[in-house]
Image (cartoon, rainbow, N blue to C red; front, side):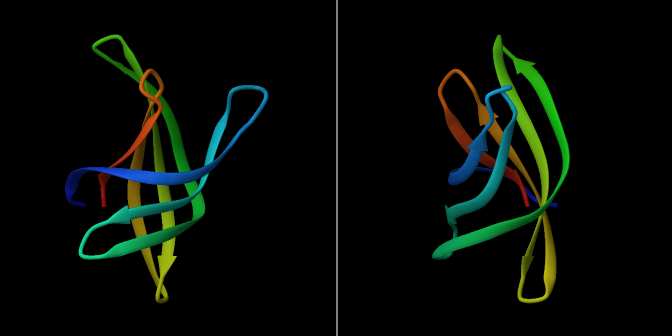
Length: 85
């Protein structure tokens, strides 16, 4: 996996119990790429400098290949970042 810090657009479900479930990710890297999440492997909450960050390990399928990647959601600034792919 390669470490990156790319801002992304995410379609996600925000439940009434506070659980966030991402479904689709759109990012710019050598053109526009869209990843449809087929499996959520792990959900974790970390705190970095007092900022709660939710981390999601995900799997997407692109052209019959599985892509493993990590998304971070920074709650205080309400932004999503692709951190590993």
